[in-house]
Amino acid sequence: MKRTFLFILAVSGLMMQACAQQHDEPRQSSSTVQQSQREEVSRLTLTDFTDVASASIDAVVHITTEMTQMTPLYQSFFGFIIPQGVQRQTYSAYGSGVIITSDGYILTNNHVVQDAESIMVTLNDRRELPARLVGNDPATDLAVIKIETDGLTYLPFGNSDLVRVGEPVLAIGNPFNLTSTVTSGIISAKARNMHIIDNPRSNETPLESFLQTDAAVNSGNSGGALVNSRAELVGIVTAIASGNGNYIGYSFAIPSNIAVKVAADLQRYGYVQRGYLGLQVAEVDATLARKAGARAIKGLYVAKVTEDCAAARAGIRQGDIILRVAGKEVNTFAEMMEELGLFTPGDEVEVDYERDGHGYTVKVILLNSQGNTQIIRK
Image (cartoon, rainbow, N blue to C red):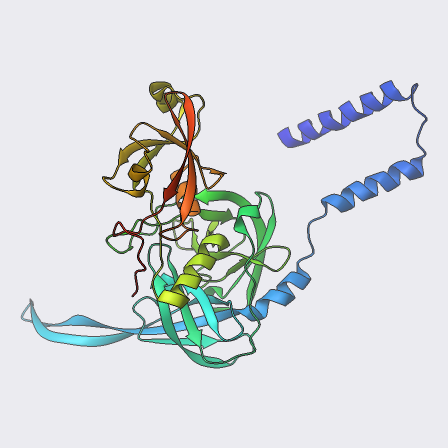
């Protein structure tokens, strides 16, 4: 009722304005008005995704993995549980992946292929091919696998920074082993930090800055594609917000700008080259802004600077407020990590910050997790 009431008010306002102006301007014919209305409706019509789905679906694959676990074997003897050694149990899992090159490189989630002893890929034309793990990155929950073939349909990467809230998207994957399933929705939010990546390497920080969408995804969609109206890959579907493991309204995807850098590093080095500032930060709210004497409620308050880190070498100190990284405003930890995730140790990045009410800009040379700019290989 509230939306209807607001809509009626808006229409009424337009009608009153038209009445007020009818003595000053020539009256439009009904045909002209109807044509104008048709053009406005056409402008607001959502994209027809049939061609997008057709152009994208062959680039999304079904992944089946097998792994063996050793489990204790027990025997009940007069009510007592007695260890009898161990037994091998084979488990199967499934998910999705996105072909990113014509010669068989596939991007998927790390949790789809982690610890797998065998990986089998089923293409949309039903061909089944074995795959090998090229590299994985637990910090972003991404992995690259490879099948030995060529001439494949692949998805080009889009620019996830240009994705706007409200923009229509398609999710393509294999939920519940239902291959080649397409669902639609919109981008509901950006830079979501859901605290769901809990298995990074010990010296790395999870990089979570998800695109949130209401496109329906379920178990098996992990590693699948989120594509825009130009059939470009803008995200890798990763997780859903659910209390029972099934879709209830929201799902999350890793932005393509993070994924393309991770994929390139895994193909080249087998390990992601990630640059760090070396800061612990807190998101600025009204209370923190007042205590810190900030000029506005925005940015990230520097709570701690690691000794001899990249930021410290550039002169950033505790109590400063980070406003922009590489020209992009950062108001959440997720936004800062997403922007830093695009760079490599040794890259020079401009950082804008505030100190004592004054603005400053410094150039920071990013360092790796070991405190230098050398390449880390697997």
